[in-house]
Image (cartoon, rainbow, N blue to C red; front, side, top):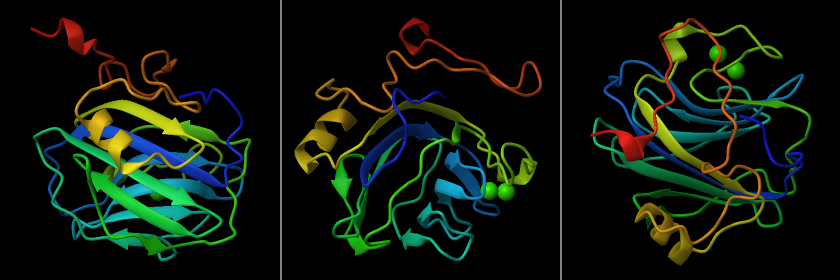
Length: 192
Ligand code: CA
Ligand code: CA
């Protein structure tokens, strides 16, 4: 996915709608933003079902949230982060987790690539099939500020109350990479 503007961020809201039948036996990458030297902003589902946010961090440097299990029924997940306080929270189907303090004073660096469905360990390759996302993913929207809980609840309900200023799913340009037939872009409005 190509962002609408450079991703130098001191706050963000990232939302994703997804459904997966993958078991909890392996990690799943939900969102990867990679710059030259780092996994700059990654969201993972861990093997113990926790969701983790990683900002310029390796596998131990994230902040983890114990939330209801992701599964085959569509789930709307958002994560918000703000550098000035470090406050980080996940939302699942419009409901907010407790906030945690993570990477206060940090800023996300621009100049990387956003990849959905895989985690690069280099700029930009070295993919591990056992970390891929398998399932359906949609409504990937991102803002360079923290949305209020009321707005996130409305987004979960499918109301177009806010248009992402970094990613807007309705107008996002998606470039498919990898083996043909393994990834399809489907217009949900036309699925019978
Ligand atoms: Ca990896
Ligand atoms: Ca990686």
